[in-house]
Amino acid sequence: MRLSINIDHVATLRNARGEEEPDPLTAARVVERAGADGIVCHLREDRRHIRDRDVELLCKSITTKLDLEMAATQEIVDIALRLKPDLVTLVPERRRELTTEGGLDVVRLRRSLAGTIKRFHTKGIPVSLFVDPRREQIEASREIDSDMIELHTGEYAIARTGRTKQQHLRSIRAMAAFGTSIGLGVNAGHGLDYTNVPAIAAINDIAEISIGHAIIARALFVGLENAVREMARLVKTR
Ligand code: PXP
Image (cartoon, rainbow, N blue to C red; front, side, top):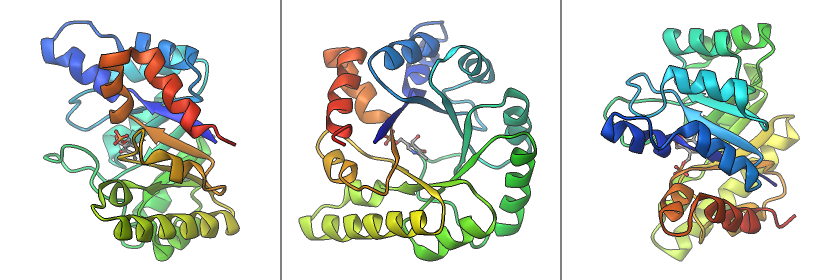
């Protein structure tokens, strides 16, 4: 299983002082050196953390791959088409949310998403759609020619009882198998941490997971390189 690391929070900290440090580009280099398979960042409409220049520099200098998370708005789509990351992951975005809340409603948005996917494909950029582990959303993703899906693991991560956690885990497992069976690449992410990740890492149909908050938070205490290595040990069990 591959591990991609979201470095948005490094930019959040930098922006808090309006200075240059900590630099997301340096963080990306450290993360790669520690064994991550890819870098993820989210260029939000309000630029609360990652900025256009960060994406530009990351695209030019990272040695693994850059997955650009983004809302499918005209402005951000145009930027992504110009900068050509290795992958774009389309997510829903609300201005006042603290982090992405839930998957895209691909069923409802299928027409506009299909147009956006086509634009990326004409530039040779593969597209992943961030979706809840629900069959109809995954089918719709396939129908509009998405290359991949990223299954939203947030509900699993915040489930309070063992029983609901197991229910969410079962749906993630079943929907990962379903996605693979209809020809989609399947990734997963959101809310994963050092304790809840092993059960997700054990799902064979998931090719890659994307983690941000838990690793950057752990990095404050053990350093970024160690935080990545610890997570990589849990994730790369197969
Ligand atoms: N995947 C997607 C689509 C996300 O929006 C985020 C949050 O930016 C993540 C994964 C990573 O979530 P977390 O920071 O909770 O690990």
